[in-house]
Length: 287
Image (cartoon, rainbow, N blue to C red; front, side, top):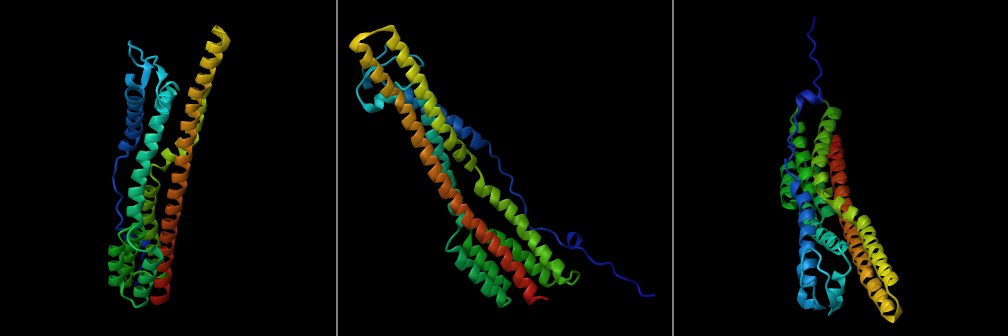
């Protein structure tokens, strides 16, 4: 009686070359705190400097009662303690905009993604896997990284005699999916800060305005005459700086968030197309 050989499975016969990168995200949570501290320093010691007011508060302290602002920027100081938080939010947005710009620019790689995929398709059609891998090294982006991981498995499956074509295609697809799972979180990392600030900044600005309005009307109730009306108008003007700063920060955050998500969508589409290219090429050339 002839001995039968058990069918090999993808899980036992193949292994992944994709290794997760261990990186701490602690700096992402420290950055907003540092930005708020810097926002307070700017508000208290730059905008709120004694030289910016005709009647500075000699007592100083955490929130000195400066009067007689000499410029519109100095009036922002009188918007209250919500202003340094909003300045910190704006600095946080700027920090993560720069960080995401550098990261996504690196992930995009060099050259056009569609052109890169066409070159890989051409090399695979000519059964030149090494040339296709060389193109990935030139691309140096997330699409190239995913494609390279898939091509290594692609090359391994060509010489594999234990699996059938369908199992080989599944092994390539699995490798691409694992590489994609490592690349996408890196692209979307820290975007949550932009989306959160986009929603919260406007509300914080309105909160500062409401607090300023309450303070102004309370002062109006304690006095009367034309001087009280003047103080009220000044108080409302100062309170509205909170709204302006909050809306400006929110608008900038929304714009940059949409720009980055659009770029990420383009990279994601390229990754999906690269995975489809590998599986379809292998299935057609190595039946």
